[in-house]
Length: 177
Image (cartoon, rainbow, N blue to C red; front, top):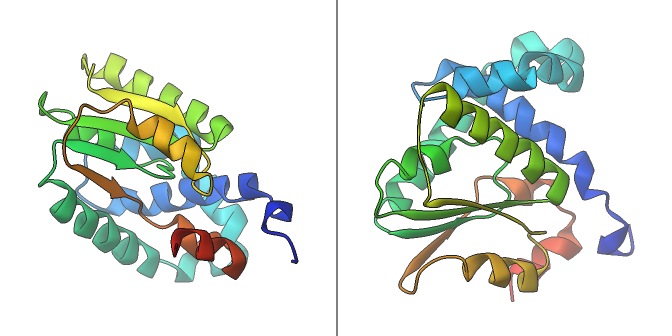
């Protein structure tokens, strides 16, 4: 690949459902519902094929990655999550009304995510005015800047759980600036 813009980022989106399937083995709230709503098991089976039954290690890996980020992000009142995928983190963090959270992802993926979160809020009778959704390509810093401006002034945590592993080397350099 010569040009990073040739990469089809929307092909990354199914991996969000893949990881959401493996989260059902954790104690993280809402994960089973998210996996059910997205038919995550089928996506995992489709992506992994014959390796599906040998891939339970992904449950441990995804839980550890998720919880490691939580430990560090909990110190902040303003949180911007880049490439949210299907994470329930925004819904969980915004239980604290003093925490403001902006979930970002590619437009179509974010639209699906927002629908899932709204359904979960409806099912559980939750009100989260401090949870915001802003479409943003993680490689377009101007879009992330717009999303960050939704947050109140003050220190901000910028977190992301794993989108960079899907990027070609040229695009990873964008975050190295």
